[in-house]
Length: 256
Image 1 (cartoon, rainbow, N blue to C red):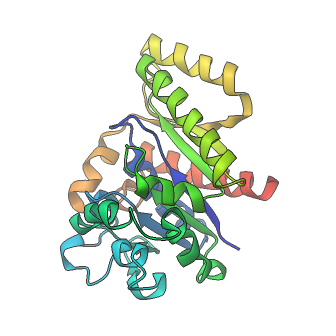
Image 2: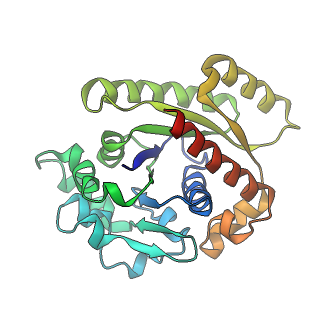
C-alpha cells in the first residue's frame, strides 16, 4: 500500500517543488517505487522531473475530470527513476470545472486507489493557495510534509497551514496529519535562522525532521536543466542532504 504525502505550505517561495522532486529522486535512489503528482498549474514539478509539460497528451487535469485514469496519464521519467502525473496550464481550469461536480474533493483519492499497490510513495506538489486542487491533495494524503525556511514570516504561515490541516482532518480526511517540518535553504551562519530552527524544535519536537537541507547553488541550478538536484549533481551538499532525508522518510514510515 502506497504512502501518500502532500508537500504543502501556504507561503510561496519556500521550496515546495524543489523538495518534492528531490525527495522523489532520493526515494527512487534508495530503492522505493515513487509516483510524483504535480497539482500546480505552473507545472514546475513536471518540468523539474525531466518531463516537457507542453508535450503531455494527458495530465492530472484529465484524471480529476475522470476522462483518464492515473495509469493512462502518468509518464515515466527515466532520468529521475520515478513516474510523473504531470500538470500544465489546463489544470487552472479544473478549479472552475470541479465546482458543481459530485465528490469534487475526492477525485484524486478515488483515482489513486486503482494504482495503490504499484507504489511505495506518492508525493504531491501542492500550489501555495488553499484551492480545490490543494484540497484534493489533502483529502487523499496520509500526511503533510512542510518545507520551511527558518525565518519569522515562515512561522506565521505555518500557523495558517496547521489550522487548515485540522479542518481537513475534522471534516474530510481522518488520516491526515503533519508528518514533519523540513528545514530548507538553511544557512547556519545566520543567527535568526538558528533561532527560528531552535523555536521549531522546541514547539514541534519530533515533528521536525532531523535532516536539514542547506542553501545550495547546485539545487538552485538544477531546474534550469529540467532535473532534480539529486540527479543533476548527486555529489553536491544539497543532493546528499535530500538522499539522507529520503532515508529518514523511509525509516519514519516504518515506525508509523
